[in-house]
Image 1 (tube, rainbow, N blue to C red):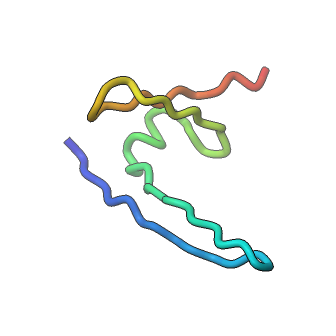
Image 2: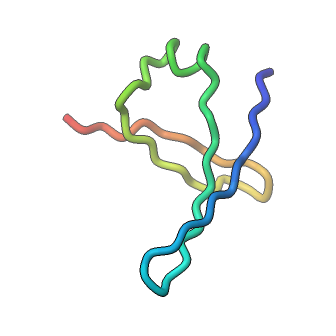
Length: 58
């Protein structure tokens, strides 16, 4: 099973702090599911599991 790391980034917009988290999709998964340019939706499924769904833009 492939493992990735979540990275926290912080930036300023005027007087507001913006915090975002990034995770890299492993190359094999992105290529297998042809994810380039797709929009993804994240949902909490349980205490330690989330679900990732490709949004149908058609």
